[in-house]
Image (cartoon, rainbow, N blue to C red; front, side):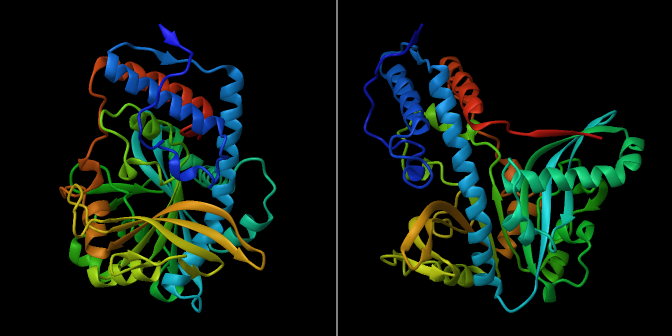
Length: 396
């Protein structure tokens, strides 16, 4: 049976804790919904009785509106903060080159994962400041560029047996022009991004053209410095997993990466200098934070994976609050994850699919029992209604 009444909550953090007051109102329906879900699962753990909370259509609609506003706010602010972060780490004197990478799946007579990559250097800034479309800037630019690619390559793609492309995620990569000999994305992206599939031999596909995984020596010789960012299309699956975990939800397990940025550095020493420049000095946070371009940045949480490696991943992950700084003070605070990764570690985690540290080697955690699976399935279904589609499909 399902329970619609109040359930006593255990003393722990709501997984959306960081977004309360940073995109979600204090009396947010979305925030309260996740709290009720977690309370119901905690009650099941204590009593072994399955009482899954029901939510009215009005509650779901209100939560969905809040999620849409949250996505729009983070969409706009991510471009602004991302630009400041790029200039901070790559310098603001050199011309920047920008590549959009769309991760997805080709379907048809044969199916395989692949990425579509497009040069958006000359239009990204203008688009993000002048767009009036209904969707977020990120989704609009991603779908438009996928449509442009399919329109120009339709005959070739159909000859290859493809009929649809599913958009699963997109990322933006920023480079200094002086570091790029040839902005050929089929040659460049394999040096910086995860474009490979475990089919043997380190093969991958960029714009439906087969590419080979570079050796570590080739990677170190030719991969340029870059800063990247991405926005999650949906966080429903990850959030549902947090809500049915058996251990108490701690700071480490809060949702914090709706907007995520990555900075590539040369070595461990530079990684610590980068963290210090963002307000984490000698393992202490600078009170009040630091100024990065138009933003005041305050460190909220630090995961130093050099001192405590996680699944063989090494780097420094900062969770920060970034607020626009102006004459009238700070406004529009948002929470962001900034991953600082040295080049060799990036190769192991993103490029070399056979390395034990590669992210594909670590499957998603599964729920621990059939009953917790029941909770997970229902929670994921409701959260997908709230958060929206996790992927988009484009016909070829």
